[in-house]
Image (cartoon, rainbow, N blue to C red; front, side, top):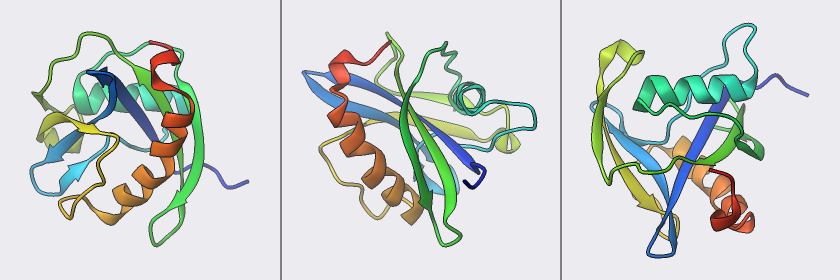
Length: 145
């Protein structure tokens, strides 16, 4: 099995009973989900938690629920997906990243029932098409927080 290239921690919430996933606008690369690489000696879950902290400022704790893996993009890089609820997050916020040259990302919630538009890079369309039905199948209201 190919070594994972990326991890994608999918943070979700229920808003009026409808699941939403955390996303952000990158100042030069459009709308995205949190994702990143795995460092040497780091488990995929540790990488997902670190990327979430670096890119969003969220300090999540274990456990995260696995949503599986999928090969994404022209290079078919293997991404691992994890889902988790983080209580009491605002509707939107800005965060200056610890990585990515200190960019400021603008966070928002994307309804799981809405398709992504052209403001999103194609790899995130692929990621969303993979994780959205898996997240719904796990019944978001029952996933760990």
